[in-house]
Image (tube, rainbow, N blue to C red; front, side, top):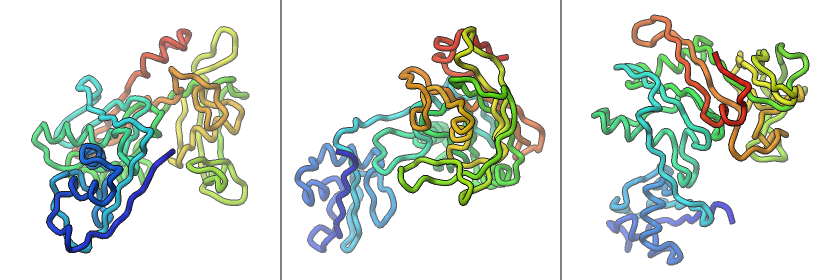
Length: 302
């Protein structure tokens, strides 16, 4: 069925009513219990902004929008302390699992890393919502960086913009690329015929550059693991570039990769950056998920 969207302007007769009571009053097919789940997940908007509090009183004339996918379960993602790679007074770096979006979707039903980090901050007495400074695609695992103050967030934004943060990924591909290493430099543009998909384009789009080298190959030569360094940071850049040279990522069926229910072969492996508070070089590394060891026993990351 997909996402259903309900929109209404609050009349004077509903002024002061709780949000979770107003929703089933406006749309009887949405029970109060379901309304509460939608609100807490992040699928409710008042005046264009998300509202997570079921008890919020409504104002007359307010625009209310509710988004829900009836076929999608409600999930909550909570940060495992073991996933914290680095933490100090300025920086917070975690290992994001595959399958969890970094930021909330329209409905919020999938959960999000951002809310999980926000809960962690709140439990530690840091009552602020962390900004999404950089993203990983939902199926991609690996390192994510957050700032603990607004000042640090601004510095991290500038570091990414100015190329001061160097990123390295592991990519499991099938078949291996030919040549085994090299540089890919193209334009990447959003596809107009398919939602949330990109392509190499000669006529439009943004310049994109990716460096890659083969670290290991399967004994039968059917697959390989690459070290990939994106020079630019375009949406889906690594996925599009590797598919374009005939070496799509394992599990990335959106770009022609072989289907694999257990493995999505893209992992944000290493980050190097100047510490935004001290300026000292900081190098971080996170091992790939257990599925890599199970599915790719011939690959042993150094």
